[in-house]
Length: 170
Image (cartoon, rainbow, N blue to C red; front, top):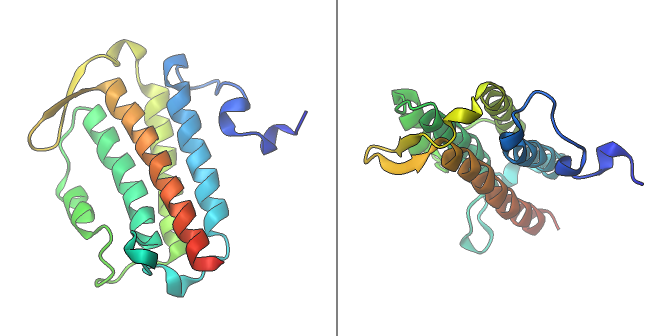
């Protein structure tokens, strides 16, 4: 049997401090963080905003990964986005303004995963089916709908990031 650390996160066992129904969300976010860190190790800084074949840049994916987690978990808490969050949303993928380094973007994503895990640990499973509104239009969702979407959306962008990184570094 392979060592525990070499297995995907979901195969390492339950996280003792995360409610059982939220284990898949936590596992996906931890897996995403590990994959982003591995993908971005030694990534060439001058390629951060390149768009091979006109796909989204590595910089965009790193900003978006952090932003989506922040926004969806905010809605899950039944809060509106702050002015700071709205500015961050508007600046995702905009390489025209000063942007952090690739490693700083990776670090910010890791910190956002930590904040998300803290929220998961304190989420009462009895609230998972409570209604939540998304965005200014208050589109209908639930606490669990938002948390699961955050995990699946994160993994989708990690996959896209993986392809873009490989296209730029092969």
